Image (tube, rainbow, N blue to C red; front, side):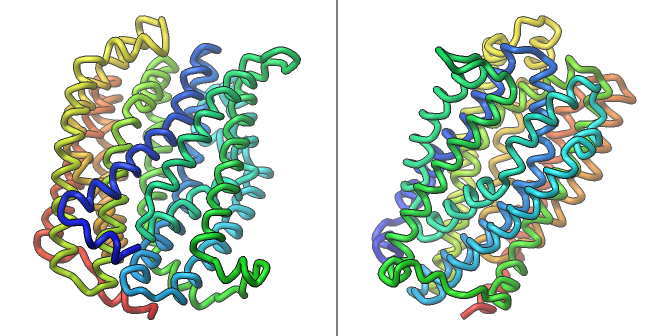
Length: 454
């Protein structure tokens, strides 16, 4: 796979990996978007309930994505160095880690779902609805964990098309299931917010079955020939994966826990403001698909070139990934600015909420090119096995700059939703500047980490 891809040069290789990843991200995002769109038709309480549930779920995602990032880094490295033995070991141990983490967080949800959601400070009706949604989605956390990790394994080999195809099909199914389970159809009663959660779990399960079958056929062919000889747990190898994945988890957790805190501040501004922020975030998330797509390309290309010991080329490709993404996301920003009112009216008829959504999206338009730098450089750092620097920078950005900014600008100075999104802009600008500074001063790669496993 690596040798075939190296026949591609420059931007062709980047786009070969990034475009399918962008399309995949688009259809993955559709799951959350469709939920929010349909649930908004039920009521603002339900929108807020999904919002606080997803804020907590982001903490879970941080753990699963960290395992996926570690798998992606090492799979890419062993693909670049043509080491099939370690590629297979990495695959199995990553799957085992996903299963373990999924079971643990599933039990946590089963026992403590409602107390966890109460940390968000929402009113009783929102908590009751949120608990139903949260438990249905997160008790089977194994499904969530495998969704992230199996796709990351495949991407690490340089195949971004297969996760894209799976994402397209399961989201087509999801749209139909979402409507049926939320509003009811024929003999199936409408289940409201619970139906949205059930539909999401079903399509994610279909996705992991598809991805796992592909991995068995194309990466773990020996396991198939030996009638699924899974191999044993290799705790020492898992520790090496976690040594790279833990800082990535830390970065995500810092971001998400910080998000929980400033979400609490937004809730204090009123249900209408929180609903507007949630809807604006659901619209903005479509811009992330481009950034994450090019971040995926950066991680994979850098990891494979590091495995092939082509270090100068790795930096050049990382640089190109960043500035191509900046161009695309700047175009998205222009679109957000001029279509903000139209997009807001798709979700609600409440004038107060619409007005606040428009304010948020117009500020967000200026965030887009900055966000591109943050997302793609973070992916490049991960490909270079340097997952600590993004964690440190995110810690300062989210906890000090964003959370404090939301409090001062949004609450103290009374700027409301505008203050919230200005604080988000300042945070992203801070992180972009520091990531670029360290990148251009060659402090973005940890060669010793890449050489730990050989």
